[in-house]
Image (cartoon, rainbow, N blue to C red; front, side, top):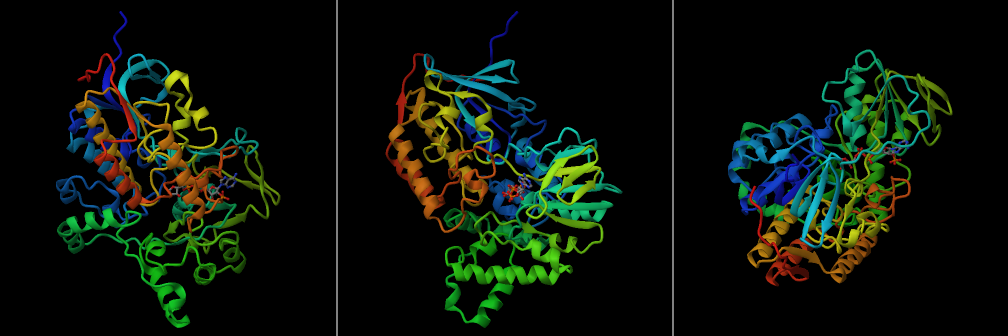
Amino acid sequence: MPTTPPRYDVLVVGAGITGIYQLYRAREAGFGAYLVESGEGVGGTWFWNRYPGARFDSESYTYGYLFSKELFDEWEWREHFAEQPDIERYLNHVVDRFKLRDDIRCGAEVTAASYDDAVGSWQVTVNDSETIHARFLVSATGVLSVPFVPDVPGRDEFAGQQVHTARWPATPVDFAGKRVAIIGTGSSGVQLVPIVAEQAAALTVYQRTANWCTPLNNAPITADEQQRLRCDFDTIVETLNTSPSGFLHPLHDRAAFDDSAEDRQRFYERMWQVPGFGKLISHYTDLTFNVEANAEWCEFVARKIRSIVRDPDTAARLIPRDHRFGEKRPPFVTGYFEAFNRPNVRLVDLLESPIVRLTSTGIETADGVAELDLVIWATGFDFGTGALSRMDIRGRDGLALNDHWSDGPRTYLGVQTAGFPNFFFPGGPHAAAGNNPRYNGDQVDFVTDLLVYARDQGYGVVEIDPGAEATWTNMIDRAARKAPSFGECSYYFGTNIPGKPRKYLLNSAGRPKLLSMIAEIKANDFAPFQFARVADHGFAAR
Ligand code: NA7
């Protein structure tokens, strides 16, 4: 006998940091909420990117949840920058602590979703076969969720093992005695290199573009620090909520050439020692837009690389030549440059000898074939829109999201797009530009408040005005071109994916603007969102 498809008020897609929080907030607000996740466990990005060396490069206690002081108090991060297994454990702890697990179904991938105007709700197809109805569909599918593997000839011919960092197998990959290739030297590749280097018989690192890598400066969190973190909870929250990009690192108050040459070198030494993004945030105020200031810091970093890497040719290749510091997302490293001093590690500069193809036994470049047992693709993601573009989302009158976004994403506040009523995507394109969970949490809070407002007013349909969408999207595009930081060479413009529109995918307006707009919108009964009633405006309980 056919069964009636389940029906929820809110269906959340994706059990990453954002989706778990959205499920929690929707349920706390009294909605019948459910979450579907394609992976076999919760964690999203932090479930899939389980390659050795994967870790936060924002401070753990600033990247986790802050909605519950009890949660903050009871969870002990072991390191300032937690490694993937700890992050996955944390997210599982949150799911259990807030009794969310029964409302999460793993192994459930959304393969289609269409809006039914007649009833004001979404029909969602899971695993190509099952149907779920939802009044509101909230896609928390993240920005770094669809791995990108370049179309290198011969990929299917290689007889050894191939793995992408973002689809790392649950069973450990054994490097011992193996000849390993890592292709890609972004944040993932450079985290993985030192670990493989220690274990593999031979490691060849294929680098197309050198990145401005600087030390992460990770450390265990001492008992005293744990204690201080707990005492400082309110200050931490306040600082994060008022910082432009959601970090604890204080802003500097001096431009580079306010200091003498000697003082600048001392300052650079200090920057080299600060943890993670402090090197971008607490740096000279003009670092990212004063060409000379940036060049001087780059020269300092280049000198550091030359002082670590013993072979001068390898050192020279590891120093970026085509972009300034901060123009691309800077990776943070632990032992990366040092790994190239090992006799079993070799750097191949793909600008000099590009990959021709994979053969059955290895990788062929202009210089010949490297024989390999394992090829690791650390080649990044279809950032921002990757997951949304693969779910066959259709809004009013069958409008395909991919058609509406054929020139790049069009959003309002990075949470909704016109023509797709009752569909939201916190933590998606235009969501963040800094500490992701902070921005994404703001968006989840906003979406939840919006849905509560709609329900309380007896509305069943929520839709953004197309004019408001155009204004916000144009502002994002304009601000991105003016922004002193990320350039068009960055994957934040979609540049790494062949054929993808070159449009900015982050929130170039920044968090203070997002928060002030949210406050204004709430004070104005959520204008410019438009609301409508539907015949059946009752909200489903599970
Ligand atoms: P990234 O930062 O996008 O890095 C991908 C790397 O793969 C980068 O070095 C690319 O070189 C390289 N790549 C991409 N395509 C190719 C081809 N065809 N041949 C050789 N090399 C290639 O992804 P990550 O996973 O490292 O990091 C993503 C984010 O995760 C990171 O920013 C953090 O937010 C966490 P390119 O620079 O394009 O020349």
